[in-house]
Amino acid sequence: MSQALAHEVIVVGAGPAGSATAYHLASNGIRTLLIDKAAFPRDKVCGDCLSPRAQHYLERLGLLGAVAAEAHRATRIRFQAPGGAEAETSITGAGAMPNSTLVLARRRFDLLLQQQALAAGARFRVGHVRRLAPGGGVELEGERLSARLVVMATGAALSLIKRTPLAPGRAVHTVAARCYLTRMSSPGPDLRFFFDHLPLPGYAWLFPTGSHSANLGYWYSGRAGVSAAGLLPKLLKEHPLLSALTAGGEGASPVAGYPIRSDFLRAPIRAHGLLAVGEAAGLVNPFTGEGIDYALESAELAAASIIAALRQAPGERPLSARALAGYSRSLWQRFGPLFVLMAFGQRYAFNPWVFDRLFGRGEDGQPFVDTLIQVCFGAAPPARVLSPLELIRLVTSRPASRASAYNRH
Ligand SMILES: Cc1cc2nc3c(=O)[nH]c(=O)nc-3n(C[C@H](O)[C@H](O)[C@H](O)COP(=O)(O)OP(=O)(O)OC[C@H]3O[C@@H](n4cnc5c(N)ncnc54)[C@H](O)[C@@H]3O)c2cc1C
Figure 1: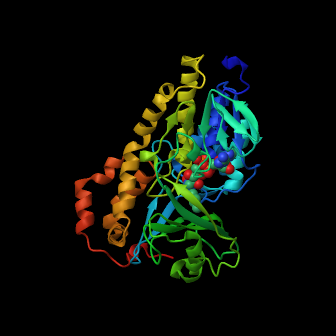
Figure 2: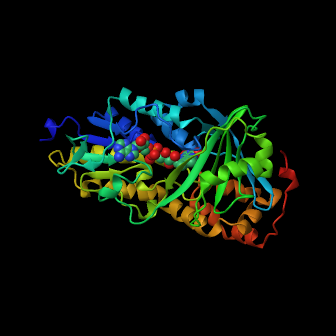
Figure 3: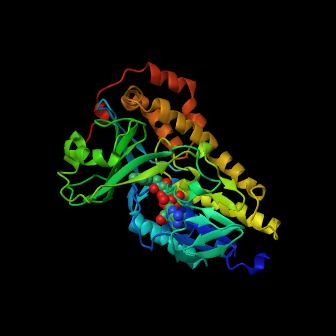
């Protein structure tokens, strides 16, 4: 029966998760249709930063060279604590992963990924999927497109997923906003994170995109109803260091906001004929807000499980949730402990008391800062930041308002 289908798998959403899933499926000979409501290239509100892990998974898609050739590379991160102390760290990837981040506008990055999926043999259609088809597949503008499996790669958008068994249980969104700055005097070479002069939990970022341009953003991850898009212009004007660095920001693009979903720990992942990847599975780090690496990584895990399930149950249509159980297991093994730690940190450690101690200890605190950032980027196991000795040192230390050795701007 399945031979009659034009497409074995339909992937809804051509962001990093959807395009990477389509690439891996099509490369393995699976007839795959990728659908997005937008024609490409299209914009996506983002900080545009690709972690070492994201680059590792881009390499496996055969895309790292093309992305790196157009992107801006950074090798260090600088932090500004609520009380004014500064710290910095080198970016470290796990194993052979690069010790740097890349920043490339999503309009371009997502196009490269989508084209890579098409080059591997996936088909593409522009269309807004509003419902699933009974018996497997989707309905698209009155047409029924059948498939043995639908992969939800719809990011933080809820309009479709909430009408499926993968609907998240309760409100899951926080909101971040960004704008692009041009004609700056210089953003400097490093990624910058600011925890001062703004509401916590949250942070502002300044990611250089060139020697006179940057992506500036703010993410508020709390529940007090702070408007990230409303606050960003104020930060640009009034934040002491940001306003100096951005030199008035007269070249700022309009501020754009977009929701973030980071509820992986309770998100439904699979159902009869259905599976979620990337942010549609809540896979955005609750502490850092980055999700492109998890999107690419979950795509690879999903494709491996789908290919195995399609082969093991050739007559099953749609694929049963049971046939896809390996995907849930591998996601949990890969991300479970990290997300538990990051969700705990977002809830209980994202405050001035902790950040002033974390970033205010100068060289004494450097090993802990280095380790924490490695854990956040997935370059070290979560247990590394739970070292009792390090935690006692952190709790008993006296916060400094400025660590002079790190006070270079
Ligand atoms: C302001 C901001 C800054 C961020 N900064 C970073 C960062 O610097 N680094 C990082 O790693 N992560 C960052 N993130 C998170 C990152 O953007 C997401 O984790 C990532 O885009 C998730 O990829 P995805 O493929 O799962 O979803 P998306 O990239 O959101 O792609 C979803 C796609 O699905 C399509 N779609 C949705 N619904 C439908 C439908 N019903 N029918 C058809 N198509 C549909 C959309 O058009 C879209 O193309 C940021 C997020 C925000 C909001």
